[in-house]
Length: 504
Ligand SMILES: C[S@@+](CC[C@H](N)C(=O)[O-])C[C@H]1O[C@@H](n2cnc3c(N)ncnc32)[C@H](O)[C@@H]1O
Image (tube, rainbow, N blue to C red; front, side):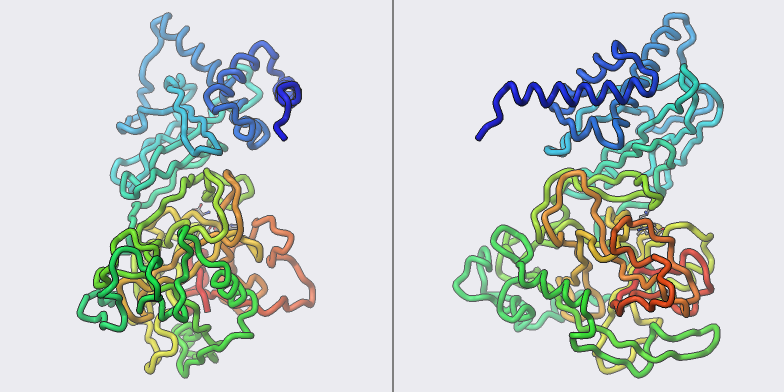
């Protein structure tokens, strides 16, 4: 049954009253709020979710922006308006805009905003060659009423610089953070010594479906590429991951001890080069893989067994979280369970290279290396010069912003075999574990054992906010057995960058 117009009007009236109550609390009179609220509603497609977000921060910002614009215009007519001599503008930084977003459509309405007048000389400039960072982050100047700091929405319309088929925006609702410095890459890249052998000759006839045509999912029988998943495709016709597959992958994560494990004689993850010791292997899960059709297959690019290789399709946004986790990733559209979100992309390094990189680089608060399980179960034990990891610190994609959440994260990472028929190198793809609503943060469980006292490096203090957060002071409790990720490489001296998001 449709709600009546009266009911809708009543609901809107209540929402307006709530908004005015909030702005009055901040000493903003209704006559200032009302026109800005009306404009914001028009521009956001009447999206109250956006207006109310973060305790009405978009509305409050818009009111102050409106004030500043007026002051700018007055300054201009007085002949005072001009460029801040302290700011060296990059082409993108000169396009500073106040941005409204529609949570449902993911589309954005740009309201051009004039450069605010400099109140002091504390704006920082950015070099043009430091990755996709094109903003001029500013410290917050005082507003005219002096009691509330003016927020600036540092924003970028597309952090991918056109390298993905969708644009991915970045916003700083808090307004204080520098835009992250990194180079956006849409595909993994070998750093120097990592051995990744891609060649069509390595793909045997049994490892591809050369005789297929069109869409493998529509054929009467599953093709050779479905062999990995017991003769069934991992994807549905709608392009979602199948329920059963998702369930098993999650069970592997939650109850690793109920699955078969491989134990190495000389585990690369337990080597401590500094002390010259070798710990006992904890065992590695033989994980479930997705195998996608690829170049040697006869099907076409729109085949339903090619999802990850077609790249990001969801509307995503990088934003600055309020809980102390730094930047995070959220979806701008509702995502059904089993949706492919993005791959974890970075430079492919050997363990040794990662170790050397960590030794020479300055310590940073956030860490971005993820290990690949690398050939567990193969005949020879892996050495650090062979075992691979993905490091998104310098070069990476949007996945480098996905924060950790203990136990009830909404994403899961699943290994995907595409162009190499072995398990030495593969892709790490993120899929939704349940239906996710627009504007929800996307998170995955890094599987960190926060209680592991024996570990040389303390993981970050977790602020995931989950009721099931593992980073709690559990006196006398050893915590439950989890499939741990550990620091890579183990010979790294304790330091904040040494925590790798490692799966064991
Ligand atoms: C892969 S990065 C995620 C993006 C990062 N927040 C940023 O600003 O670039 C991993 C880092 O984010 C931070 N982080 C992720 N999840 C967190 C959590 N639940 N609590 C606190 N910090 C977290 C930690 O500093 C961690 O080393």
